[in-house]
Structure formats: C-alpha cells, structure tokens
Length: 104
Length: 104
Image (tube, rainbow over all chains, first blue to last red; front, side, top):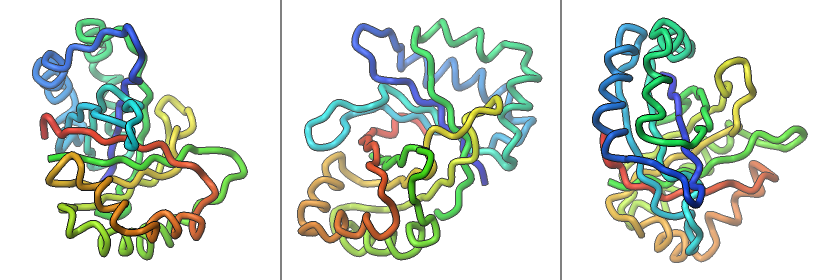
C-alpha cells in the first residue's frame, strides 16, 4: 500500500476552509482518483506540535493508493480539475509526500 | 480519534535505520503507550515528493490514539525510555504533529 500525504503548513494569516476541504474537495479527489487505485482517504486537523508548540501543519490530507504512481497518473488525467479546486479552500502551497506503508 | 505523526526530515548524510525503527523501536513505543490509549501504529518510508522531487521526510511514524493527550502523557510516564531509544536508529530530529482525525 502507498500513501500520499498533502500537508498544508500552519502559517499565520493564511486561509484554510476545513469544512470545504473535508467534504467538497475530498469528493472531487475521490471522483477523479478512484479509477487510479485510490482506496481510502483521511483528513487530519492539526492541533499541536506537542510540548505546547503550534502544529507544523494546519491540515493534512492522506490518500491511500494500491500503487506508487496512482496519485500522479490520476492527477494528470484529471486535467487540472483537482488543482483548480485548491483556491476554493486555501491560499497555502502544500508539501506533498508519496510514501510506502512498510508497517501497519 | 487522534493521530500523532513523527516525521523525520530527509537530510543528506543523515542516518536512519528503517529496519530497527519499524520493529524494535515501534515495539518499545507500543509497550509504553498502549496503556495510554494507543490503538494502532503505521510506518511510512518516504519515496518522493511527487513530480520527481525528493521526499520531504525519509520516514514517518504514525500513532493513533483514543485521546488527544495520550501520547504526551504516555511519553512522560515512560521516563525517557522512548526518547533514549531514538539514538539507536537516527541522528535526525523529528518534526511532531498531534492531529484530530476529522474524516476517514
């Protein structure tokens, strides 16, 4: 199993609409990526960095895929539909990581 | 549900023993934190940042807890046993985030 983490940095003054992200945006993501092996999604709301520190990321969206390249193939095939929706919930630039789940 | 992400930055020249981390270290984590509501663990090996970029994190360890404060209470109660084991697999300083799972 593979996991794509899309991490939105916790920056002062930035805009992030968690309600829109977890409902409308994730539905768009599923519509476009299920045919490319998307099997599960997860949305995290950042609470803290531990020890009283702020959370490094305001939100993290996790997408589980059957293959390592399903995410990039699916985003490319969506013709920009997923990326075009980002401005509807944030002005942040996310950090992306594709990982292999090696233990769970 | 709450999720603690321990993210090890992908730095050139740094040491990270994934085999030790996913077996020995995670067993130590479970021994000390199960009594504090740890319900599941997950280990991710960073593959890429997408678009041919390097992965931001060489490894991410995820711990799912029943409560938001279970991780910090458990680590404190372990008396340093978990932190003392970190030098056995890495010289990296991890980025930590405590999140609420708001959709899955």
